[in-house]
Amino acid sequence: MANREELGIIRGARAGDADCQLALGKLYLFGGASLPLNVPTALHWLARAARQERDDAWRLIGNHIPFEIARNALPEVLCWYQRASDAGSAAAALVLAQFQQQTAPPASAPLRHKPLPERGVRPAVLRPAALPKASGDLALTAEQAAQLDQLWRHHHAAFLQQARPLLGPLLARAPADAEAARMAEWQAGPQMLGLLARCAELLPPDGVDAELQHCRELAAYGGERNAQLALGLWFARMDSDGRRQSQGIAAVNFKRAIRWLTLAGEQGLAEAWFALSRIYLKPEFSQRCVAEAQGYLERAADMGHCAAQMECGMYAWRNRRTDAHSDVRAAYWLQKAAAQGCAGAEAALQRVAAAPREADWMSSVITCLTRELSESQPLLAARLELAALFGLSRAEALLLDVKAADHGHCLVVDIRASYGRSKRRLVLLRTARERQALDRIVRLFESIDSGPDGLEGNYRQRLYRLKTWLPDDLMAA
Picture 1: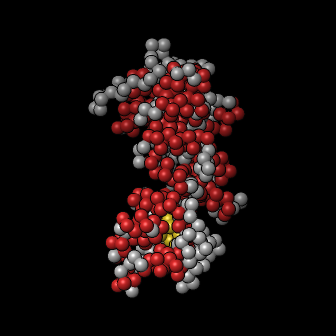
Picture 2: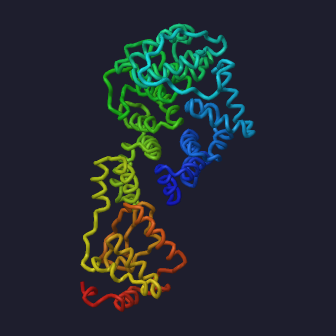
Picture 3: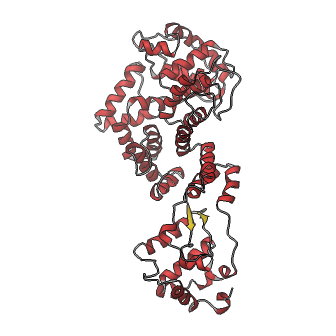
C-alpha cells in the first residue's frame, strides 16, 4: 500500500501534473518505499511527462527503458529515444539501432512516423512487400503503414481485408504455433508484431478463424501483451472477469494459461493478474491456492483494476475481526474502486465508514475558531477545526491522537483507551481541502507530546481549557 507521500504523487500524476508524472515514473522505474518496481508502468508515466516537455523524462526513457519493453509502446517512444540519442545517450542509441535493425526502413524515410491521411480518404489496395530473409518482418512503406492505421481506427473489416494478403506469405513461413516458434527461436519485428496483434484482436469469440488464431499465438510469443492476455484466457476458457466461456480450447490447459497471463501481467496488464487470481480459486485447478490468488488479486488492485480493488476491499472488511487494521485497508481499496465509478464500492463504504451524526455543539464550533484562539491556543484551535471538518464529538476532538489517527485516506477515531464509552470508527477523507487541512494539523502536532502528561495535559485539563473559550450554552449541548 502506497504511503501518504506516494499517494499524493499518484493523485497529481492522474490529474495531469507533469512533475508528479515524472516523479511517479521514477518511483516505478527504480522502486519506491511501498510501490513495486514496474518498468512498463514507469514507461507509461515517463512518456506522459515527456509529452509535457519534461527533459528528465525522455532522458530516463533513453537511459533505462530496454528494447524489450519499449517495443510494446511503438511508435510514440521512438521520438524520446531519438532525443536521448541526440543528447549523447549510448543506451538510447543502442535501442534505436535495434529498432532500425528489425524494421529496416527505407534510407530516405525519417525515423519519426508520418501523419495519417485525413478521414474519408479511400486507401489504395495494398500489395505485400518484400520479406527480409533474416528477421521475417514485413517491409511496409510509410504510405502502406499509414493506410493500415487509418483503416484500423475507422473500419476493422476493411483493415482485415487489406491485411490478409500481407499475412499469407508471412504465416506460410512462420512456425506452426507459439511453441514451435520458441523451439525455432523465431523473432518478430515491430511492424510484423503490430500487424499480427491487430489481426488477432479481430478473432471472433468462437475462435473458428485458424489464420487469426495463428496470428494471436505468434503475436503472443513475439511479446505483444494484449495477445498474451487473450491467449491465456483462451487456454483457461474464461473471460477477463473470470467467468467460464463456452468457446475456447477443447480441453482447459491451466498450465499454459498461467504462463501467458504471467507474461502479460509482467508487461503491465492488470487484467492478467486478475485472471490469474480467478484461476487459482478454481476448484478444478490441481494447484488451487487461496493465498496465491489473493497475491495476484492485490497486484491487479495496485495497478488500478476496479473489480480487484472492490474484492480486496470486501476481503479486508470480512476479516476485520481478526485484524485490527483490516477496516483501514478495506476503506483504502473501496475508495479506489468507488473513484472509478463502482456503485457497489460506494455502498460498501457506507458500512465501513458511516457518516457520523452531527452533534449540536458542532454547528457553532466554527464560530469559536477566532484569530485570538489560534494565536493563544493553537493546539485547541486545531482540535476544534478537526471536529468541524470530520464530525468529531467533544471527547473525540479533545482526546484524539492526531498523528496516529492519520492513515492517508482516512482518519481512525479511537479514544477507547482514555474514554471507555466511545467506539472505534473511521472517517473518510473525501476532498483535497480535508487532506490539506489534516496535513497542516498533523505537522502542528508532530513535535508535541499529546499524552496525558504532555503539553496539553489530561482530559480534564483540556476540557477546562475548552470551557474558557466556548459559550456556556454550547458547552451544555
